[in-house]
Image (cartoon, rainbow, N blue to C red; front, side):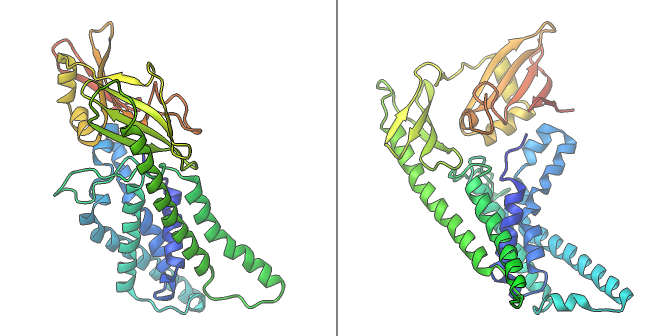
Length: 360
């Protein structure tokens, strides 16, 4: 239900950060940074309270600067427990083989700083997609999003995976020819992968600006353009979904920045701003409505159906997610991150759902 940069990418980013040189400064650096790089997504535990509760708290304080010191402390605490367990096991065996695995000293304060760096990488990665983050929460609840890569970006995934796997493969080849196994492997690969990701972000940022320019200069039959947005397709940096808002309607288009063209269907891609009714007004004041309108940038709130029990369904959709991808089709009719509030005949909330799951 919740959109976030996939956890494997976060884990691998932390591992690459550790291998980029931090593992030479302190023992357990790679372990700590790998754990810290994914730690903010522990807010997924709010799902136990229901989908609306999870939506409200997703990318909240665990993804904000105010939460990082506490999270870094928790990560170092987990690593300390692992260290104590290893010591106990080695004492039982009357060996100290763990010392042979690293020449770096055990330095807890350094691990704390390294964990903070990995936690910052999580916020940065989440900022690059179009869901957004609230880094200054709770003092500033505004959402910020770079919208330059998809929630899952295969190019980034492959770069990180190669950086982590290639050293092991080359190590096997080296062991067969009798080469001495290096203590720290993969530093060059890790640095290359991280640098390539930053370069990819820069490239995509440039292409996104081109897509925005195409959207601004398109023909809207004389309607005033209030604002535009561009959202990424994965792998292809030249393809973008653009959203243009005018006083009366939204229009979705597909921008090709390589050829400098923008295409749209005058009927299917045009969304008139729905009127406010008593049902939609009640839905906007609901728990789900308040949370959704706080997060969503391009919201369609529509009164859709009234069932035999007299319940009116009011649907919340965000135009940023209403376009198909190779992995997800039919997003125009049923986009992710949609919510429904059911209003009874007394204009009160009967129940709410997100992603088909009822908030209890």
